[in-house]
Amino acid sequence: MNTRDPDRRRFLGYAAAAASALATGAASAQSIARLGLPSAPDERPIVTNFPHKGAMILQRSRPPLLETPFEVFDQGVFTPNERFYVRWHWAVIPTEVNVDKFRLSVRGHVNQALSLSLADILALPRVELAAVNQCSGNSRGFFQPRVAGGEWGNGAMGNARWAGVRLKDVLDRAGVKAGAVQVRFNGLDQPVVADGPDFMKSLDVEHARDGEVMLAYAMNGEQLPLLNGFPLRLVVPGWYATYWVKSVNDIEVIDHADDNFWMKVAYKIPDTPHADMKPGQTGVKMVPINKMAPRSFITNLKSGAVVAANAPVRVRGIAFGGDSGVKGVDLSSDGGKSWQAAKLGADEGKYSFRRWELPLTLDKGEAALMVRCTNSDSVVQPATPNWNPSGFMRNVIETTAVVVK
Image (tube, rainbow, N blue to C red):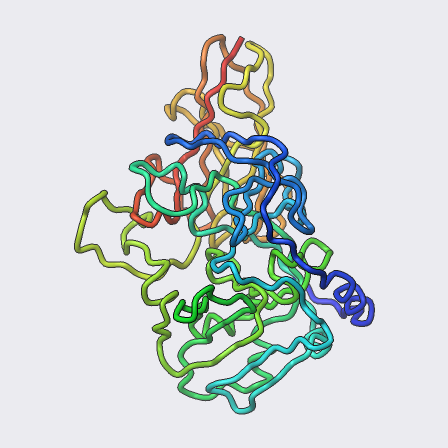
């Protein structure tokens, strides 16, 4: 994590210029994307009329669920802001933010309650960190048997270089009292009905103060898009995006385990290897979702692609280690009987995507190209997919079938 002094005056002007209204009306389809899901419907519209966003796969209009088209991941290790996926829980989301009036509240089990302006936040030491943000339900559409929820393909993820301030620095300014247990985060989004559970997430106080969790105000060298959490977003490196609360305006230090709906009931996974269980299985201990698992993908070839026989075919893609770095990426073209180590690209940090590539020479016929990641903790992607009733933490060695002529 690097630090450098911010140009506060420049950023405040930059932020104010983009606190614009968000149009959340009906989206207009430009074309159709096919996600390759095992169950219908497989097609989704491509839309371009969401603010600060380019062409995105529309999963839902209200609240916005926008998926990154998978070909974007072949364009570089960092996902462009205008193509970065979007996921909100409630339809009442901020449509504009007055940066002069915005305040971040820090309260609860602290020595001194705070009400911080954006200028106050920008006056704190600036830090940067590259990290993958991945929806807990990324790739849910591939679960068999099918489960309820947004039927994402593999594009509910993105990698960015986040800039902001350490959450630790904010908490230390308030002074966390002895006996604090967790830190709870709330944002500007609201339930659509009066008795709906406000979306809030919590981290153990030790995690919140580890020096890596941050409040980001910029991504990839630009301000946060409104749809991705402007003006402040929690960044929890290595953990699933449910904890990356958007448009954070309230931080509460509590002296007990958080029992709100989004911690006690929602976002639970089986307490088993790979969060795996059998359909219909009962009596499985469930725990809150937490750290991400390693994953890897081929990005320059789609299933059904035709490649030349007996000539080098350069296969490339991305990998990430979940809650640690990428130790290695291996590729198989014979159904997993043998594996070759791929060449890794630049290391942008242990929480980032990492590029990989490998030239292969294939015989005529059909080839199933398989890719697997091993992270720095020697955790390897599983050969068989996991299953759970919420469709969380999908992970398996990915296979891309190609035709060799």
